[in-house]
Every structure is written in structure tokens, then in C-alpha cells.
Amino acid sequence: MSVILAIDQGTTGTTIAVMNTRGALIGSINYEFQQIYPQPGWVEHDPEAIWASVLKGIRAVFRKGLCKPADVACIGITNQRETTLLWERRNGKPLGNAIVWQCRRTARFCEGLRKKGLEPMVKERTGLVLDPYFSASKFRWLLNHIDGARGRARRGEIAAGTIDAYLLARLTGGRVHGTDVSNASRTSLMNLRTLDWDPELLKVFNVPRSILPDILPSSGNLGKTLGVPGLPDGVPITGIAGDQQSALFGQAGFDKGAAKCTFGTGSFILMNTGHDSMHSDAGLLSTVAWQLPGQTAPVYALEGGAFICGAAVQWLRDELGIIKNAPDIEALAASVPDTGGVEFVPALSGLGAPYWDPEARGVISGLTRGASAAHLARATLEAMALQNVDILRIMEGEVGGRMRDLKVDGGAASNNLLMQMQADFLGRDITRPKVTETTVAGACFLAGLGAGIWRDTDALRRVWRAEKTFSSRLGSGPRRRRLLAWQGAVQRARSAG
Image: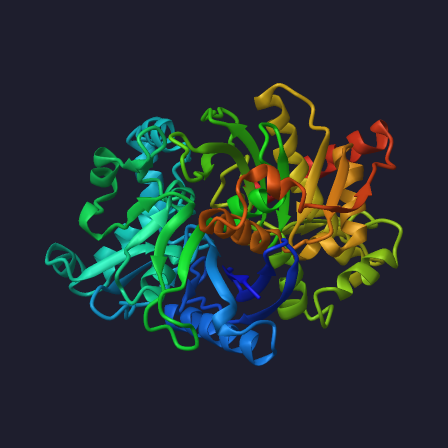
């Protein structure tokens, strides 16, 4: 039996999954790791804990009999994207904790660049806004705050990258220092036209080219395993993509205009724009979706993301204690017919697209004596759907067309109440696939293409299947009133910063 092994390295945990050569997921195993909050607004991960979760997952896959080490034909990697770290080239040892994409510690620096008038240049070259979300300012912070880092960088002793680059280095015994083009496009350092690190942007952010990885296609011969506990040497690594791009690929979103929304820690919406890089003036991002073998030009996408989605449910569980397990929120929210006037804007790490307001703060409003945990739970689910409507309406305006349907995935996509809310507030059909682990599917599809298991994307179209479609049950009048109330709550959150 030949299988594809996927490493899905996410914000809160790592999933190791196995797909057969017919495109069916055999099984997956997830291990969470600690979230580190050194001070308000700061978020870190221990890279060694991430690597340990990868190795633990690989061992568990083999121990549970999902496949044997000798069965692994190739490996695909998908990852949390903008999270940034430095490590020693000689042994892969991290120089410190990774700065997570959610972290806001570089907000003041980014604001300083904005006041200097640099944002138009950054956006024109990278498709991204000036925000601490992206990797460039994180690289700068690490180089400035880790003792001796800049000197060691000049001596060629350290490497830098996003999580995909770190995993690729560890998997190949340090032989490959590379990142795929989709992840590179999220750093604010890669030029969308040249697909290379931009010299002027490197100067702006004071990041030396020497520490950055080579930029590789998303599929093809990217490296081979060496010295990985539990895996044979020489297993080809043939697919890499950032998690949201991987999800679009896993949703078979190969055609221009195809769109998906992933409900994860945050919610992320991508629309395929073909080989054209579209620049948005309305708070959306232009990014590279993927580059396949033989493609001279990559496929681009428009993206809008909300920083907090499933993380809001985790907050209700871990900090407020109103639910014991994340799936419990559906029954609790369904126990009341509406929110009772309660609004929750989950700006717990600022607001992402289309507002890009790092100073916004989470706000719960409309409380009365009769407000209950159920009303807050329902307001949380509604907020998760409503913030996506903000993005999707702008996205439709940018591309100049009405979306036929939206494909959904991620953990919260299994919540039927939330999916119905999304259809109601958006006024579009919502289609959920049979395989909701589409980040994993995308990594496997990319790896399979790179290894020659599938010849082209047409072969992959036949693998994807829909499971359920949700259609709107809400009239245009009630929808309009609900959106107006939500906008009022968003303004309160922005004023609270």
C-alpha cells in the first residue's frame, strides 16, 4: 500500500494524516501544544514543542496501524503561515520561541512605517497591508531582541523562516532551507511579480537576505527525509502550502472565481483570481495561492481573514467556563431563539480584514438582566458568521460578480447551526464537503501531484465530494437589520481600543 503522509501544523496543534492514492483519508491524529502569552497582545509557541508534536503524531499513525513507514510514498506539509522563528543552521535548535501570527507586539513599528508613507509601496509589491500580522516585522523583532542574533546572522550561523521552512529543515536533516511561494507571499518581503525577496523591502524591515529560505514551488521535488525518528531516510517531500491556500486547493478551487472559507482559530476566505494578481483598495489582500510543477506563473488569490473565529469558542470554554467542550456551543446556542439583543465582537487580537485595526478590543454589549450564557453563545456564533459577511461582500465588489456559493471547511464547519447562520446572513448557499479536513487534503493533493500520483488537477476534481448544502432562510429585510446592528457593535469595538 502506498500512502501520502500529511503534516498539518496549526496554531493550536499538529495533525498527522494519511491519504491513500485514491484520494480517501484513512485517518488522522491531532496533538495540541501550549499557547504562550508573555504579556497582553503577545503570543508565542515553543518550536521544540511543535517539532515534538509532529514526531509524536507520526509515531501514533504507525502505532495505530493507519499505515507502515515503508508505505509512505511522499509527504505534504501545510502550516500556520506568518508565525516566525530563528534557528541554528548546524543543528536546527531554535534561538527562542516563535512569534505567532496573532501576536501584536510589532504594532507600533508598523504604525511608524505607515506614518512614513510606506504602506502604498509595501502593498503594491506584496499585496499586503502594513500590519504586525505578517512576518517581516517579526523577523526584525527577533533579530533585535535575541542576544547576538544579528551578529550570528552576518556570520551565516542562523536561519529564519515560517513554520514550513522550519519543518522542512528538520525533516531533511538541515539540508534544505526553503519555503514555498504561498508562505513566502505572507511575509511582506516577497515581491508578487518577481516571486523573490524584494531588496527594498528587506531594507525597510532590516532583514538580511542571507537568513531567509529559498522560495520553492508548492509542489514538486522539495527535499527528502534524513534522520527523522520513525521515518525512513529518502522519503520525498513533494507538497507545501500555507494552511489557507492548502484549504482552497483541497476544496478543488482550481478555477478562477472559486472561493472557500475555513473556520479555524481565525476564519479565512480565499478566492481564486487565476494568474492575475488583483490589488484591493478595500482592505483585502492579494496573495499567492500556489505554484504547480511546470507553471511559469503562479495562481493568485484574494484573501480576507478575521483573526478570531474558533478561538472565540475556546475563550468561552477556557476563560469563561460556560462550556466544557467546544462542540457544546451548538446545543447551548440553539436553546434560545435569538441573542436577546446581546452582541459580541471577538476582537480579542484586534480586527483583521477589512478593518485592519490592531487597537480594536473585544466588546460584549446589549446585556440585560435576562441575558444568559446561551445568549452569549449564540452571539458568538453569529459574530463568527457576520465577520465573514463583511469580507465576502467586499470581495464580491472587488471581483465585480455575485458569488454562486461558498465552500466551507475547518473544525467549526461541522456546526450545522453556524453554517445555517452563515447562509442566512450572507444570502448565499453554503456547501460543506465530505472531507472537512481540507487543509490536510490540499497538502496531500499537492504532494500527490508533485510525486506523480495524480497527473493534473482534473484528476483531483473527481476526488472532491459535497456532503451538504445550506440555503438562506432569512428575508432581505431581517438580514439588512441584522447587519446594521452588527456594524454598530463593530464600531463600539473599534472605539474601545
